[in-house]
Amino acid sequence: MVTLIDKSGKAAVRHPEKAHRPDSEVLRKPEWIRVKAPGAGIYRETQRIVRDNNLVTVCEEAGCPNIGECWDKRHATMMIMGEICTRACAFCNVRTGLPLPLDPEEPENVANAVEKLGLEHVVITSVDRDDLADGGAQHFADVIHAIRARCPSTTIEILTPDFLRKPGALEIVVAAKPDVFNHNLETVPSNYLTVRPGARYFHSIRLLQRVKEIDPSMFTKSGIMVGLGEERNEVLQLMDDLRSADVDFLTIGQYLQPTRKHHPVKNFVTPDEFASYATVAKAKGFLLVSSSPLTRSSHHAGEDFAQLRAARLEKLGY
Image 1 (cartoon, one colour):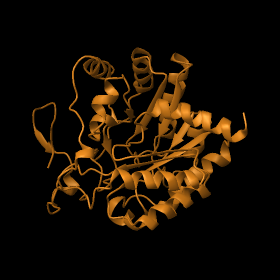
Image 2 (cartoon, rainbow, N blue to C red; image 1 turned 180 degrees about the vertical axis):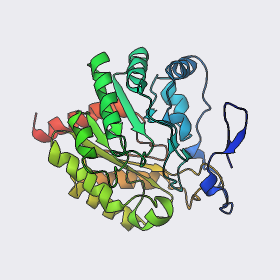
Image 3 (cartoon, rainbow, N blue to C red; image 1 turned 90 degrees about the vertical axis):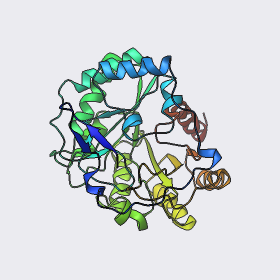
């Protein structure tokens, strides 16, 4: 198990809720999954800006394999509302526990980092905050407003929790006018009890559908991992469910197991299979599809947003 060292120097288990699970075999990664280790230079400069503004990034907390590539381009995905999540999804490497109070300075700190990094497009995500009455919706809105005030030309993509049982929360976030609203389904419904037990599949579908009802002009996006034991026909049905909610952009990437205590990788999906998923998804009407072993929600998000806007204009005949 991964351990954390707190400020007092004491070691603590990162995932206490997973500590008593039996170890599972970690499959050897195929050649197409391997990436270069993070380097120096711009990567270190990005790291310094993140540290100086007391920020958390999902790049580090989730152990993203693309961190070296993204941080070399000054692309860091900010994770707001702390580094402790109230849920314990079987796939996730983010720490679980009782979160600390919200930092009132965080919106300005995020905006300052966005300015210093010179980001044209920024992705903001968060831990689940089921302990808050609005699930952190107002904090999301505050961060969006702070970035708009400091960097008016920067486009903003948010990757939110599901705000389960938080009436009115979604409306607060959509009213803040992010450019892209992303909420990941993560996996097919048959896996939810074991992979994403705190969530509800059709609630997540309805959340994305509701975004479009409130603001039809807002781009919506969702992503899943494969390699969790899903069947191909289940993935195709999930695509149909997302299209019924008028979701614009779908991402599909390979699940990678953080530790032996996490949900095991059932199989490594080949690049050809990912290409096949992309072909089917485009035929089903998504404006944009990113499907590859190393695809992640915020990977190449800026370039993807430009393609998303272009695809909409083309669809409208401009």
